[in-house]
Length: 495
Image 1 (spheres, rainbow, N blue to C red):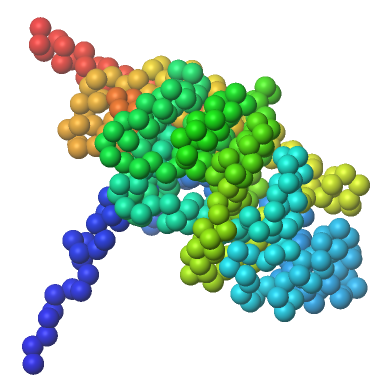
Image 2: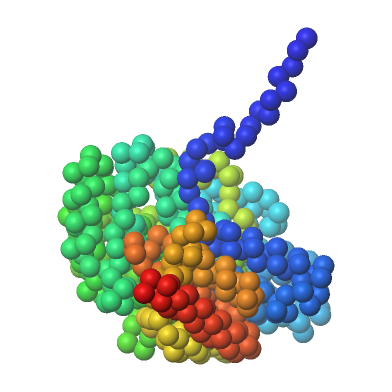
C-alpha cells in the first residue's frame, strides 16, 4: 500500500484570504523587536540600547499602566467567593467592592465564574451595561440590544460575518484605518470601500468624500452595506464634532447604511474643546429612532481602562429586526459565551463607583491620574515630533496614538525601494535597530498614497518617554543627514 507523503496543508493550500490581509501592530516590526530582545538576552551589550520600548501596540498594563483597584477587588472576590465569608476580608477590601461582588455572584449561573453563560452574556450584567448607556446618553437602552463580547474585536468580526455575503458587498472604512477592519472584511469575503480622512484638517471626515466613495463603489457594482466610523480616531487621534456626527447620521439614514461606531476610546479625550458623544445620542437627539437608522456601537475595557488581556466589551445593536438579532445570537453561540471576567469588567466600567460610594474617591483619583499622565505624555511626544526636521504632527485630541508624517529625502525613498520595502517600513526598521524604539509603519494603516507616516503609542510611562526622546531625535537627525548627504553626492556626480 502506498501513502501520500505530501503535506496535507501548505502555505499554498491555506485559505488565500488569510494570506492577503496584514495586521501591522503585530507584524514584522514586532517580530524584529522580539528577535532583538532575544539577542540582548543571549549577548548582553551587543546592541546600542538596553531595552526595547514597545510603541507599536495599545497594551496599557504591559507598558506600565496600573490596574484600577476597584476592578481588581471585585474580580478577586467574584473568582474567590469564599472570601466574602471571611472576617479578614473587610480589612482587605473596600465595603463597596464587597457589596458589588456579592450582587454579581448572586446573578451568575450557579454562583460561580467557572461555568458557561448565555451566549449574549449574563442578562443582569447586560442590564447594568444598558443602564450605563442610558445614563451616559440620556436616551433609553435595552438589555436585549446588548451583546457582551470578548473585547470589541470579536464584536466587529461578528458584525462582518452578519453583513458580508460575497465580494460584491462593500463596507465603507476610513483611511488611515485600524487594520482589524480591512482584515475582517477580507476574511469574510467582502470588499473594503475606503474613504480618506483629511490630514490638513486635523484628520477630519469630509462627508462629500464619503459620498464620492459610495457613488464610485455603487457604479462599480458593489452593494455598500455599512459605514465604519472610529471616534476617537485610531491611528489618527481626532475627535469628531457634533456637526460631523450629525452629517454622518443623516448620510447613513438617507443611504440605508448601517453605522458601525467604534467608540472604544471614549474615555481617552484630552482636547479641552472636545467631548465624546456617542452616535446613538446624536441620532436620538436628531429625532431618529430604531425605525429610522441601523446602528451598532462598540466599546471595551481594553484601552480606556487598560484591561486589554481581560477581553471585556460590548456592542449595542439598534435598528435591526428581531430575526436578524436571532441570527446574531446563533453566530455568538458558536463560541458558547464571552468570558465571565470580561463580562464583569465591562459592567463595572459602565457602572463605576459614584460620589458617596466608599470606593469613589480612590477610583476617581486613580482614573484622573492615568488620564493626566496620558495628556502629559501626548504633549511631550507631540513637541518632540514637531521639533524634528521634515516631520509634521497633528495634535492628539483623543485615543492613545500619534500619527506623525515624515517628509524624507528622495535618497531615503530610493534606498527603501532598492530593498523592496515602503519608506515608512525602512525608517521604522532603522529606528528600531538604532534605538530599540518599536513603532508601526503608516502603510500598515493604509495611509494615503504618497504619504509617509508612523504610528507611535503614548502608553510607555513618563520615564520611558523621557529616555526615548533624545534617542529618537538623534536618530532622526542622523537619518536625515545621511540621506541628504547621499542625495547631494548623487547630485555632484551628475554634475
